[in-house]
Image (tube, rainbow, N blue to C red; front, side):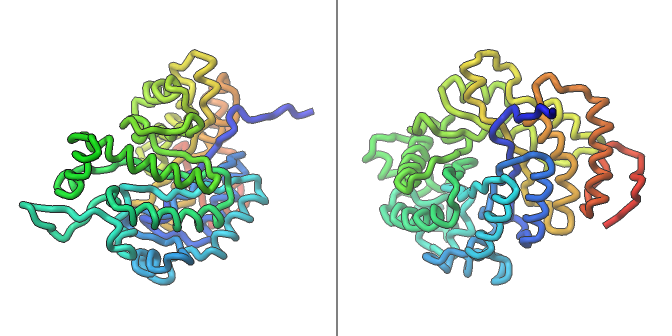
Length: 365
């Protein structure tokens, strides 16, 4: 009899398809490899500053103006293909539409969505985050998320909320005046909180639960008790402790950024990173759902995304599946070496992670 079960329910992999577009074949290969590693959540960071490849039926100009070109888009048929492919492998698809920052590509198709920046009292023709003071902003987002909620049927949607620069908001006299009227003073974190609270209410209106990056909570936004907080900042033990002390569910990303390439056996760091580090209270541990490996897209596309990701992500997968006591590095070195050779035999171009060596099959694809 085989006794095997996961330590955490959320064992994810984030793929960024905005900074470099990834054809469907590379997404489905990622899903295959996730399944082989017992990962069960595909976090699809589908849009960001550089491009908007999600093809909206309700707002077609978003991708027509915001994608790299007409061939670098995901149609709703493409998305259904990914979702069904993932489902057949026991994987959920959680889409991320990150706002109010990381939205430069949105503004190309929705020119009044972003905040005009000012210099010396006049608009300087540049734009910042989503404009949080216009009612039209929330009408647009409500219509967009009505569509997204149907296209992506998972219970959860990731609403982002990270790395919001306040400089443009500070420069805009209309934003400053709005804040004074609303009693926010000069605390732009409160303005961000106001915006995110309204967006979260929109998502809730479509029966969606949501995941947010940790800044939303760090900046004091009003969030529902069942919110899932994505921790990406270090030192991660302190950040995870802070989030769970506040009573929120948490998933960890901070120590598993696969896009940060280090010389040598960097996967050892992934293997010894643990969501429970420094968290001893059972009540807090119960709030930790798991974590995810993240492959941000600045330096990867279809030519290298698979090899850069695997089998380094396998170290993350083991940490999220196996018991906390499973930390025999020598055993892991031998097993990841054998697993890499198995993946090559199955036709996947995956990189060597242990230095000099060879695979008996000697198959290069």
